[in-house]
Image (cartoon, rainbow, N blue to C red; front, side, top):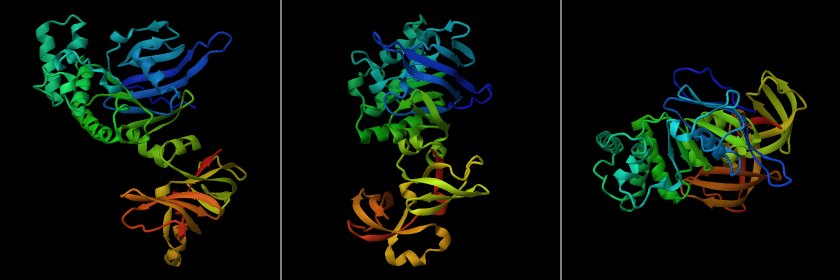
Length: 382
């Protein structure tokens, strides 16, 4: 399913409507459907992150907005101007779409100075030299790399290179900046630091953008709105917290973070609450959609950090409303410092729990009390 498009207003920077893109197949083969009837809106100052595995269509969607790929159907508007329309036969070339782009590893030219790298998009437009110099120096100063205009990329830190690449994307005063996995080739520790810096830069510059990544942690940290993609479609479009806490499908639940799932069937429904039959017995689930009815098949899911694990002697001290209680055996315990990851066998069902690393002392073979808080159990239909 595609996400509904909110009414267009003055704050709408990018509007994608019913976009479809196919690639021609080889000899004797049918074409490949890369994007299927996608709708997407980006508002002023909003960073929309496209998240999904390789081949899901996220990069193709970004390239269609940039004008680097030509869709076969639908419409794209940037800042109220139609840059592609299959119905009206409109196709605006990339350099006339008023966009900026940041690529993998920033794509800074190593033989050019910082000034030359940032000035490049302006030089090709025929702007006079004084204006070019003024705009380049201004954007470098605003992004905290003023005074570095005569350095080469190899003389900059990773954070400085990111700022220069963003300055190049911003110097032409674009309506939107498109990010094509700009941090994917950087080691994990540096990547975390650069994500923090990118958040700061966005707060300073206030740009709108579309950001492509397959990294779930990166998506959660950067997204104002998260679009999870699967097989060329957006399966869920919402704030990152909502996507994580209220996934609409088992695909989203498993791709965005980790999840414990129990296959189940609804036994009875009463006022948006249900009793669901699972391998652990009947479990209570609340917050159901009105369409859920007895006999429906699906999954009861719970995030690892919501599973409560304690010594077996403390089981009786918990109030009944805490949730269903079970006894589990620790199959593996992995210490990560801030947390401990426990792999449990709960009544023959494998389950993962995360506990505070400083407080947990569980080890392989320990028998523990496991509580599934009722408020944390969710129902996802098949």
